[in-house]
Length: 150
Image 1 (cartoon, rainbow, N blue to C red):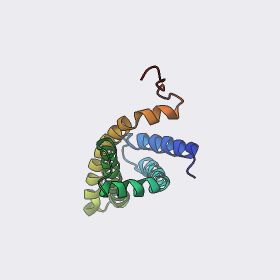
Image 2: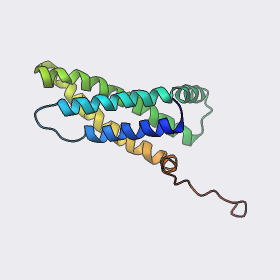
Image 3: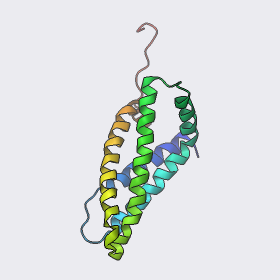
Image 4: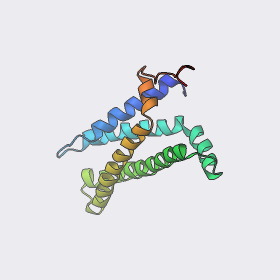
């Protein structure tokens, strides 16, 4: 399950469903619920695939062994995990408002909207941090410096 191909496929599908989830819909929330559920599923699989990395880097961070660059990536990853967990949970809780008309659940819709937008900003930061790796997914590896270039 941890093959490079699996990681790439999960990341692509997670991104596609995330983009689809931001499409504005009027009235019937079915499309958003289905797409959001699929995005949530791929988010969970993504975290599952990277759980060993997350555990190892958390230990290194707590021990003060991460350099500044890796600490920045770690902080963004943890914020992504927290923000998207909030967005997913409140998204499912908001279904009661949209489908069942339960007014007191409208607050979950607001929290879901805000946390999703904050999460989107964090994803952009995350993508910038991992740009070299993302390009390598598509066969565009950063040119290796030869010994004569050093």
